[in-house]
Image (tube, rainbow, N blue to C red):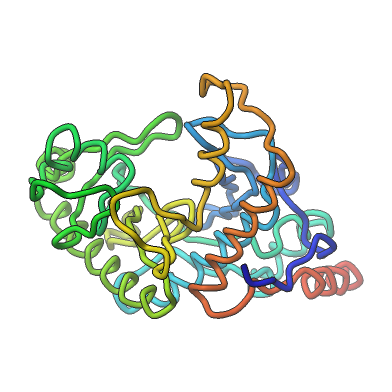
Length: 329
């Protein structure tokens, strides 16, 4: 893998279960913490936590949260002409001065590069999954039924095969446990035909644009999931977009259908855990340093390949600005 300019001695810090004491904590997901800024804005913080088999592991993966946030920022900017999104800023230097003034230097260091200021949205309770290749739960469903979420597929497809065309396969959202695949008809019974049709159309369009671009960077977007919400009645892209946590990214030059593919995500962690005598129930086992290191490299490499540059270390800039704010108090 290409080396990155990220080193263990950067000013910004790894973040596991620490809280930001100056902000009102709302809730945690498997990898993200959400804080309230005011009635209209939230702060989404991507931690370095990692989960597998629905369990959060005790290890933090260095730089994971920063890679997720900055990759989402990249895609939000790229797709801004296709669909509105909830992002206000993903760089502390662009955050409102009153918000920065409320934070200690330690909190600013924890938030640097991994936090996104967003508009509140009424989140739609479905994952909008798009699949271009046959993998994961889609592969399991196909082997069992010959279909995925009501989409009947040709016979004889092998694992990791490219589908005749990308398909929209929604799932219910689950904070804990597995998301459950559902048909478009089931989604429409909950949301209505109009909103369901709009979600399918925009999800497929974003996936197609992303897949075309990623091909030019040597990356296959196997599948991905989007989340949407409503802001003042307007359909809005929210949460994260096309990251290694929400997508399967495969290296184009290693693609070979008929088997699982190497990937830029946490599959390496899953593969390691499968070698252990663990029943996949909490508490999850500790990862050895080598597995943690390689996983971190995979997240950084995904960012580098897709954006064309290494994840920048903005930590010192944030700390300098924080000191100037403290001096002006």
